[in-house]
Image (cartoon, rainbow, N blue to C red):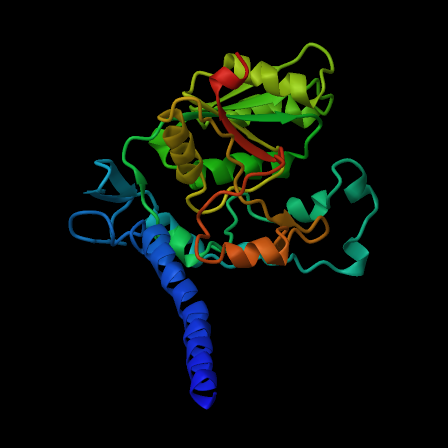
Length: 318
C-alpha cells in the first residue's frame, strides 16, 4: 500500500513540475519568436547600430522574409532634443503660479493657451516607449502619407507646435504633405498670418471650408485632396513623439500585402495636462490583458478607435 502511495506522490510531483515547467518553455519560445527574432539583432546580416549618422541608419538588414529593414530613428535630432532645457522641455509641467490661472485662458481651447504660448514650438518630449519598440526595425521602402489636420479656431501656438513636431520627428521621405483644413474659423490669426507662416514649410498646404462643416466632413475634405499613398489624421493640438510614423506606415504596408486583411492602426496616445501641458503616461488597458501581453509590447491592440490619431488607406473612404 505504501509503495502505491509513494508512486502516487511521485506522479503528483512530476505533474506539478510539468505544470510549472512547460508554460515557461512556451513563454520562452514566444519571447524568442516575438521579441528576440524581431529585434534589431535578429535580422540577417551584421547587427550594426550607429548613432553618428544624421537621418537614420543607412545599412539595411534583410530578414528571413526577404524584406530590407532600416533603423528609422533620427539620432541627431534625438540628441538635440535630449539637450534642451527650459519651460515645458522634456514634457515637464510649466511652472504656473496662481496669478497665471486665468479663466479666459481655458474657455476658447479647452486647455491653457497662456501656458502654450510660453512653451517652445519645438519643445522636447521624453521617449517613453518600451525598450523592444525602440529596437524594432521597419521596412526600407514604406508608403508615404498625407497628414491631415482639421481645425476650427485653434490656438496659434498649439496648432504651430503640432506642425513643428511632425516636421521635426518624421522622416522626410515618408511625409508626402501636411494638409491643414480650416473649418470656417473666424480668428484673425488663422487667416493671413497662418498662410504667411506656413510658407516656410513647402510640404504644408491649407484648405478652407466655405461654411461650418464639422469634424468628420472637414476630415473628408482633406482626405479627398490628399496625394499621399496613406492618409493620417491628427488633432490640431497634439505633439508627435520620437519615430512615431514608421510603425503606423509599416502596419499599413504589412496589412495591404495580405488579401482581405486591412487594418486601421492607432498609435499610442498620451495625455497632455490641460493646465500645465505636462506629458502624462497611463495604461488604459486592464491589468489582466496587459499581463498576458507583457512579452509582446510591440503587437497592436485591436479595439475601439480613438480619433486623435488614425492612419488608413484611401480605399476606406473613396
